[in-house]
Image (cartoon, rainbow, N blue to C red; front, top):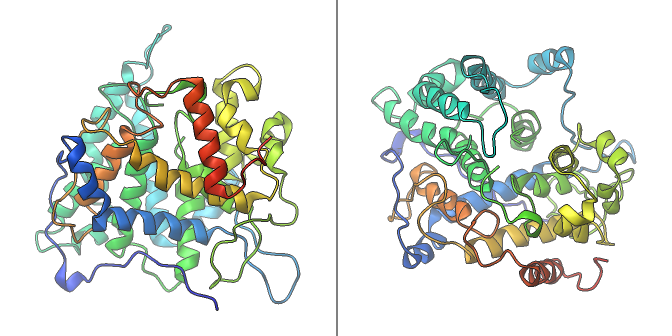
Length: 400
């Protein structure tokens, strides 16, 4: 029997919660379990699973060829055509990201070689901090914020802007990682709960629009070769979902198999195949970014991803393993005292997406992907990670 996947609920505008600016609430290890049992933790998990399900290929009644959902073309003319065809709420997000990108013109990278990040990033980040709330007053986003509270949306803008700003790295550490990525996911989740994406279109169509037209973020502390990816994790979840076996709208996610015509799981090691697919698929886009910034054999600089590429049961099995890895391993390695964005969560199992999600950002910034202090940067730990992936995916011994 088919069961519709859970979806993140949209808040009733007649009884909205109080909005507050996020503050740090996770100070020590004993604070983490409370967050892991909170509504906030559930909400962020539901939202990620909701988006994951949305981009899985769909069966079609009139043709054996399934419907797939790919990233839009990157040419300027294609972007203009796409912008005119998408919904107003998602178009507003694209406009917001364009405004964010234009700030680079006011803070160009400083010349000369740098051992670490370019110091001009701090200027850019400061500009974004000064203007983030104003950006949320424009167009459809402004209408969403204004409807969120009796103060014209001022408190809601402050809360939501915190996640927007957190989604673009740390000005202090000059880095970007999975905690910042999660902050951007939380920003989208805030907008979903506030009803920003409520239109006449089916919810699944709106979810796909959110992902394939706005989620294009492309570094935080690194484990070097022993981490999955220095910069991101979510694209591997959604990108593998794009290539799984087709389903009907009410079916659960497939646990194995691939859509017809999908690249093979092992093709991530082939640079030409990666280049052919990075413009249309999130998984290959993330692999392509790694290839852009790292040199040498793929198995040498990215052994985790190389190991995963040996899965024999298709992209559905990889998607299953990625979700379990993201959900199970990261929180278990959480530590207090954020390495990037020092925020926390409401202890009342909060009612809105808002500041109660910030604990997840804090956790992710201190988890197994990013923590530079973790005693995990060893080959033995990497071997354990690979073994855990196999066990989580139910595919022990099949990853080459």
